[in-house]
Amino acid sequence: MVIKTAEFVISNMVVNRCPEPNMPEYAFIGRSNVGKSSLINMLTNNKKLAKTSGKPGKTQLINHFLINKEWYLVDLPGYGFAKAGHQQRHKWKTFIAEYMETRANLVNVFVLIDSRLEPQSIDLEFMGYLGEKGIPFSMIFTKTDKLNNNKLGNFYNFYKREMLKIWEEMPPHFISSSVDFSGRDEILDYIEECNKTTDFSDYVPEKKQKK
Ligand code: GDP
Image (tube, rainbow, N blue to C red):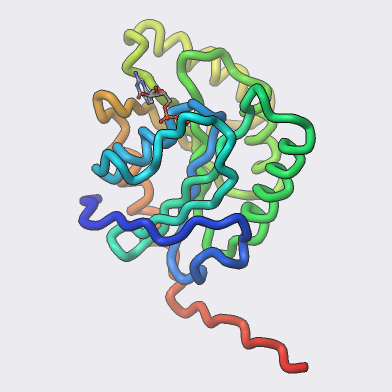
């Protein structure tokens, strides 16, 4: 897929203020500092589209970007930041669950996984949650430029073994780096293929209830 346009649409905290669900939507999520903003900027060829935040976990917003005027890329707040308290984590969970479970045009969630770390329970739990709810997801292994082929192979095999303890097979997955642009074509082609199988254009907004 060639990226022709990438425009910021809206940031908000409330799912019902998201744009009308009349186009396919792809959400990106992961632990804070996983490389999500860098990946979004790399995919859209725009160094500034997603902000690389200096304060992890501070922005609890759903950020919508319209790509090629035909699909939404959604940047969701990161999870697993060390300093978050119980209350903040609870807030995050409720807010994300509302988005994940009610957004009608959500085609796929890309769960970003830092390839320098061993499998983190918070990531495995989050994917478990998506599985339980039947929400389609794929994995993107980030920052793979930091590993040589040997280390990347070991990392992948180890991760796969962990996943197969829970899952029957590996979900779709991508090896990426925002530094050397690896994975870019594969991720965008995957989205393009998914777009072909979805059609939300006949979405009709619900009529306001008359009292
Ligand atoms: P976010 O918090 O998930 O949005 O993560 P950022 O995109 O802000 O990245 C966190 C840190 O990891 C920054 O210092 C980035 O420069 C670095 N980073 C992100 N992606 C990559 C990558 O693909 N390769 C390398 N080497 N560093 C990366």
